[in-house]
Image (cartoon, rainbow over all chains, first blue to last red; front, top):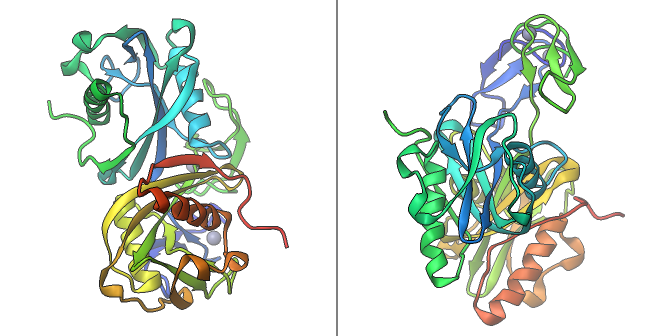
Length: 181
Length: 181
Ligand SMILES: [Zn+2]
Ligand SMILES: [Zn+2]
């Protein structure tokens, strides 16, 4: 950030009175431009014991498999966003959703919120950001080709939870986003 | 938003190619300035069967009681933010935290994340944004003087959950922020 989005004059970095963090503050209108974490919302779509995954058609991690997820938009709920992303990226209508997982990724200032649900009619098709969408049984999961640690962790937890039929809602942080090559 | 924070030139509102929402786009460098929901993190601090509440020293809802909570910062986890706010607003060190609640407030593009925990040593003191901090038993809760619907809802749920000793993690949306006068 170099300029004030309200008046167009240069911003400077300083600690405002009563604050304890450096912020971008306008040199002219004195507006404080706070920067905050972004929320990414997604689903774990399930159908006849299989999990729906999307092969990424875009960077980062193009060609790797992920769950349908994307940035939450203003004026929507996390659930609405998760269902919207599932439709956009995988042509998937997810029904009977249940809150399942919160991940913090502090190194990139992101919070992931996942809902578990059923893939209606087993129907799916790739959206603009996916080159391929497919259902995978536990044995078929491409563990070495998953796009992000949050996907790996969520799938691991799901297959454990499924054995007991109990799905506790968890919150934890993951310190890395993309596995080292 | 009127000006590009990267180059200082005017922004215009349009739907970028491949998108389906109006965004602020720079007329000069063409950068798309996305706007996304903000996360508010807080705690439900408990001590000897009582709940810690803070009387707001600032607007909105000055003079009304709330739980310690505030905007999540970049580079921290939701839990770290919740514990930080508890210390800043209530001088409260919250220990043994457990994830408890996600609220969506789509009309103001906010997501609340609450952790339940114990107030260490029963110690508290008002921070800069609180005029008073106090412990309340269930019978003492000032239901008509609570600052925000998320606080009312979380306290209601907590006192129900406490009867069974089971604290399921919930997610739901609340469509209003401040009660009508
Ligand atoms: Zn300005
Ligand atoms: Zn620009």
